[in-house]
Figure 1 (cartoon, rainbow, N blue to C red):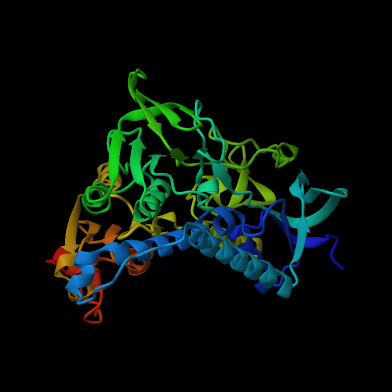
Figure 2 (figure 1 turned 180 degrees about the horizontal axis):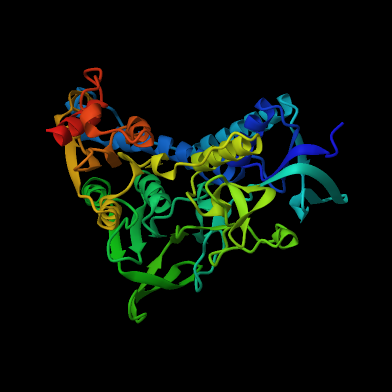
Length: 474
């Protein structure tokens, strides 16, 4: 008999914790998972899943309203109507299904599900605050996967009705005539896509001098042309939402990002705050094992996902997901969880963050993997090599032409000397699906000279990448 209650206890049952639990069971580890709220965490309940359901429904509405596109395909439709509550119900029902499937998969594999707030109680010890009191467990290894919550800047008051975060927005409880969206990252872009498709006017507010500052500049420029300019969206850049007051109307005081002087006061029907996310890493008991959060509140880890104290791994303590601050993406958390379990099983493995893709499910979609051009230039300067780029366009792709969806481009960034692919960025139809070929290439550090000789089926959208590789290789 083991001296421990479990081989592995995972604190947090989001996508990362769930994936880690499944992999742990496949490796023969007796596993328990602790969750204080909803099974599935942010992604299933308040993030990826419901937002994609809203984007799917609103995207259909947008397509059916595009008379010019439909007529080009020889299609005519009558009046288009939709029910806001039915669209909201579609998202809610999907959440219920996925959450149920996730829970059942754990039960089927005999993973113990413990409800309550879990925390580290000491080396190889976990305590759980439950409705019936505190319980303690011993475990060979502990994995922390507490996730994150929306970040609300100072001066912004959330009431959940007229001023809200993505947590409330996924419920689509209303369709305001005019909504301000603070933040032009992927969350702000996706909800701007939903609201404009369903008839709302949007004011997109960004503190940086340019919209979409975290995206490659060429992709951001294309997005401005195809996602923002043709739609009922006005933009404000270089301004901070210094004060947001809920009500009817919602009042937003905008200040110059540099001087902090008030430059404009907006009065809108609603405001979505999409200013990023912060870790849920406090009250985890880390002080019991002498671990301090970093200055941003994240749990320090190495690329093996071992938790660090004073720069050194803490034995048998691991952390994954948003709370580590590495890549705040559900699939990154899953990858981290699998890597952590592999290391628990003495099969050394690290996370290759450069090869993890990301996507915004706008219409058209945006996706990327690896480095942006500014990041690649910075790396090249530090390591002493030169980079080059190649571009191809959906307007020359036969499948995109057949679909009548020719907006967009693919961009490949690579080393001039070796041809190694450093990054790939796509905006266009099904970009989120196309990126995985590039992700595999980045993971293997492939050269454009090899990729240019791969054969792609014709006619397919994948030929956009094929063309980019061939142009890069000359």
